Figure 1 (cartoon, rainbow, N blue to C red):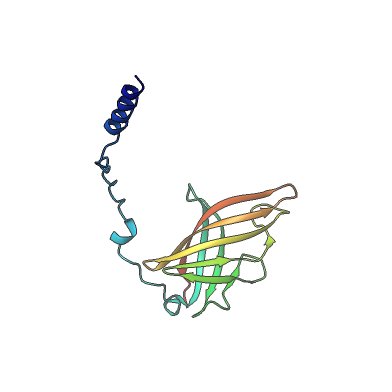
Figure 2: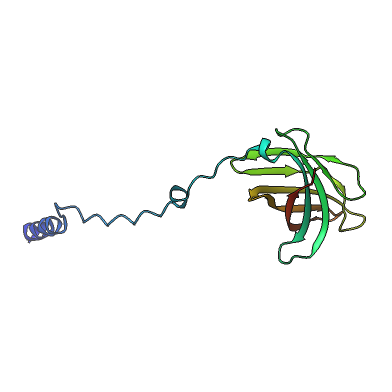
Length: 159
């Protein structure tokens, strides 16, 4: 009886062990690479946009002008100046990445929210004969950081 059980067990193990590997599942389709198909944008040429620009600032969802400012653009990333109406000029921190210019302002008294300090971070690109961009304003409030988003459009100031 013992030998029958041993033979039965051995044949069961052999029957359950397959020499063929299970079929490999098909590989998932490759995700489309959007960047590979999009044409590369030319890097921004600061010399081409150097000069004075007049900007209007609007909310993200409407065309009501919230404020204006002038921006002096230089041929490199130093010496960029932003001036709000009736304010002292501010030197901006400027960085370039491809076709974009990133601007960061120092903290200043808010034009839109009286009594609050604000600093802004903007990203701008050339679109035709305009500089267009989006900005995030960080308001310093005692209990938390309040954020508003804006868009801006700049046109070259007459000489």
